[in-house]
Amino acid sequence: MEILHYDFMIRAFISGIFIAILASSLGMFVVVRRYSMLSDTLAHISLLGVAFGFLFSISTTWSALFTAVIISWFIEYLRRNYDIYSDSLLAIFLTGSLSLAIIIISLSHSFNASLFNYLFGSIIAVNNKDIYIISSFGILSLILIANFYQKLLFVAFDEDVAFTTGVNTSSLNYMLVSLVAITIGLSIKIVGALLIGALMIIPVISAIQYGKSFFKTAMLAILFSIGSVILGLIVSFYISIPSGATIVIMALLIFMFSLFAKKSRFL
Amino acid sequence: MKKLFTFLLLVNSIYAKVIVTTTIYPLYSVVQEVGKDKVKLNNLIPFGTEPHAFEPTPQNIVTLLGSDLFIISSSVMEPWANKIVKANHLEKITIDMSKHVAIKKHTSFKEGKAFDPHYWLSFDNYIRMVSEVEDLLIEKDAKNSDIYRKNAKNYIKKIKAIQNEYATLRSCKNKKVIVNHDAFGYLGDDYNIKQYHIAGMSPDEQPSAKQIAQLINITKKENIHTVFFEEFANDKLSKTIAKEAGVNSEELSPIGNISKEAYREHVKFLDIMRKNLVKLKRAMDCQ
Image (cartoon, rainbow over all chains, first blue to last red; front, side, top):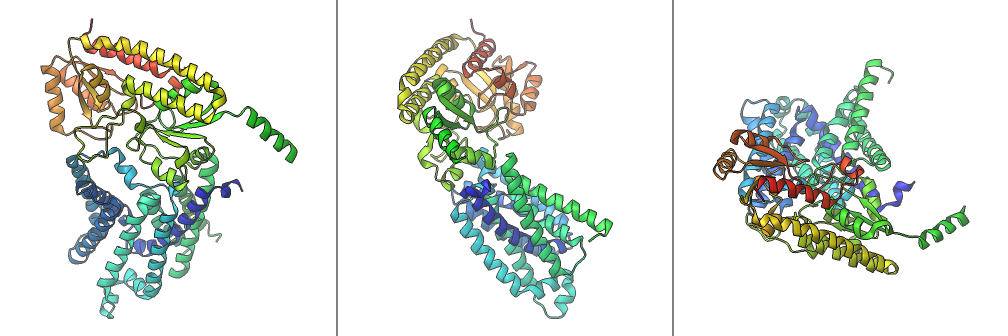
């Protein structure tokens, strides 16, 4: 296996598999909440965070992370207290934060060629420090998800009933959006917004096609996203195409296969 | 099999070429002219793409891991390079060319980190790049040092010839040009040309509506009769301004990259510089 002779590919596999597990398990709750656009919106909000970082000359990693978390709380607050559809709300924040980012960048006279590069990482450029960050946060959030699994599930499927039976839906919701926001804020600089957004949604939708229980679906989603990462890295290595985009295409192929499998009911 | 492999390795070490990987075309061009057939040259950013937006593939990194030298133009131009160099411990073979030329600070940059990355458009800098590559190749491959010295000397002679032709720009009537993006600052400084630019330092940095209106007014007021656009960026705004002001639009290359066709037809850096000169002379009402 020539591919495993290279340390950078091994780092890509390790970080990719961590991201796959983290993204698809968070993605389960995001998708059933009709929050599929959340990851993309938060990626653009992180871009706004990078712009703030340029403006105030502070670390863009932290400014992106804080902006993503704080605005995710604000989105959750609006969703709970105002009668706005979540998808419209996300669309407003996506376009709004991108526009604000562009204005701030042009006002701060920073060199914006590097803006997108600043933000969007590449899975083949991860270093050991990136892996430590992703894996330690990944383990922490998986522990949180496992701990609150039943309650999160309850809230995801029926928030009102969960609330009346005494579940603290508010804090659970804030916890979920915060975990998603931190995952995205951390991952975009490491593996890129495209990859994290796709891995949060596509494997989950593919897994849902098989009509299993929530837990089994989650396991399938994790399996599919790990599969997309491994296949995508191998294919991108041997035919020399960008890795992040190839992984997304692999996830899409698994999705199409799942749709077909559902229709022909051979699984 | 093993014997064959050892034999190949032996043959390889006798005829070994220096393996050099460069990012943008001006670097490629310099190494090609100085190294000629003694160097195996890899081009990282594909010909025919806009160099500001590039994402490396796994094979690109494999190429880098097998290179003796990796030359980048600057961290401003190739912000992705730094991360890859660090993650793969390529610091020893990586050369940042911007450290070896005269860099122009840019007025619109507040912080000291950023600078105008288009330094190859000043001939003095381009000659510095040739000398630097000459030193690097001699360091890596001392037995061919005479060849590298000769190639560099010949190439510098050619560069100086064109530099002399460019000197005629100083006597042009119209000293103002409108270009697509802020890439011609070095050239402007060398020949006392005032450069108005539509987009910012990167072709993606879009101007405001007010700036476009100002550019249209400048075009009319200053009797500018050509608005320049470039090959790998959107030419919509240049053409809009040209149309509004009722003047011509023409291509002027910042030579950040060349097209695939140009590469196949062996168009060289100096050929493009000469083409640019013809267009500049026409636009600036030169004798």
